[in-house]
Length: 112
Image: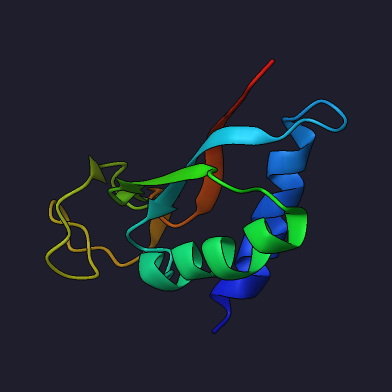
């Protein structure tokens, strides 16, 4: 379950958004559909490991999905509908992933 390691990496990002000693109330995490992350295991990692270790009771955690977006290096076409691993315009296979392949903290709100 590599999601626990990812949760610990995200914790550093969460900490950077909090003032010293502050406890978050709500955390929003974006998971790209092409990131290879299981939301269920990531949520478990936070609720069963990270939050108890930090004594963060009642912290809300929400997840948003991000669709993948790609760009073809051959013709420059940008697309989000992925039916195969090739450009729908030219058939090229030299693609860049623009979004949807990361997991990151979108926002952290805390009680002031």
